[in-house]
Length: 272
Image (cartoon, helix red, strand yellow):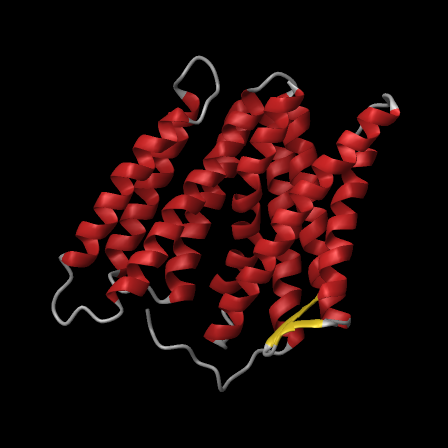
């Protein structure tokens, strides 16, 4: 990975506005396509996000071995999607094979780079995180196949989208109390992002008892909390790179969704 550029710090507006716009686009993509085209639409939406994340992550982090990293990311995305769709019953077992083979391939990829192999460990870590992220996005395909999964997927996507959007907009105005120097992220936005996800989960609930309401709030808090924390982590990447470009907002919009996808699956499975 290339050395961080810390001198050219991004403004709060440059860090949050493009990401907020892309969050709306990603949320609409994952909401509209499955609603209009069913499982095919869901596959198309997830596939687009996986490819976008592969390209953006490799560019944004400066992973060495660019071509190999992109090839591994695309292969892992395709393998994960197949593993989610081929079994008769939804499950995550197939992801173990994809991740296992992907890890070995990532090690071989970095070992076979021409000498001197600078930033080998950092690049290996970046590739492995990319493989985990595209496989996590594939989990959204299994969420939609569970009993009541289509509604659960829609709720999860809207809750995560609301959390990310509120977090960026609040931090755009008032990133306080600041979580870390040089990173325009504050505790207030973190709290309000989780609250937004809880609100979406409650609005999406179809009546029920007070216990059902409490469970819906807990699901929203879990999804919003994971997404908001990963959004903060993505902002650390943006702050370290210290420059503008198309790749960094894509990472900010898609990576938190990938982190929340396994949580959405676990919650949908429990509800089913």
